Image (tube, rainbow, N blue to C red):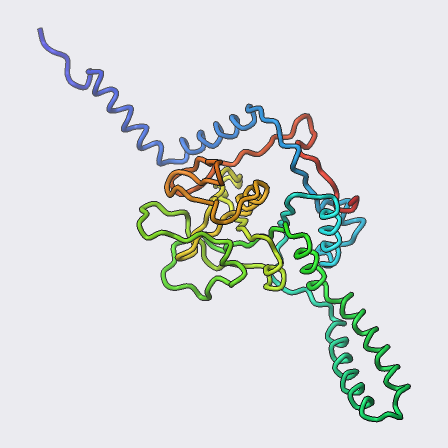
Length: 316
């Protein structure tokens, strides 16, 4: 009896299926099916959102009531003060503060202040100009009030420092491997919020280039700084987040990692990567892919209602 050809054997059929799947996995079809399966899984999953999280929204109603965006930073300073009085454990701001916000009138106030000091010094040298000195001192007091009202960066920095629990974002403009050395060193106010990259690991988190940091006046007052980079899929959806992004010999945690650590009363020494496997926050172990990416889980809208408390900024 003639034996059937090897192409009819079970092992050969299995090998063909494996090869076909390996080829297909490199194409868009399998990847698209994986994305759809993930989305369906998230929608079908049932999780109770934490009642400790609230969203202070910059929504249409708030813009209509407060004014067009961007708001003056003293508005955000007052918001932080209100949240501090309400005993918020952690305040995380997703607004970028990459440039100073100086009122045009502040330049003239500074010039008038300099002139007032010169005139005051001249008047102080002449005892007969006592009345003039008193007027110049009152002028200096008014100019000081004007400078305080117009210097919104200083007002925001003061509120951030007084709160003691404010986290600010930064962002990398590119996620790519560097070909040279950094343009600038990491600012001193950011460095304490980074993780050292060991030299003996084989798997690295993604590398970020062209970082944008908050201005020094605000960054120095913040309790922490984290990146706001996410991995956007080809369909525009966000399904994963790098918990660390490498910038040459340092790694910067994401803002979400900083929020979680701060809420657990943990400092930077207690943010410990298990390179290629997971990230530890104290006794909490967050499973990741080899590049320290975590799959995101967005709470689906239930019956048209938002899952977390949603508070318009204008109602605070």
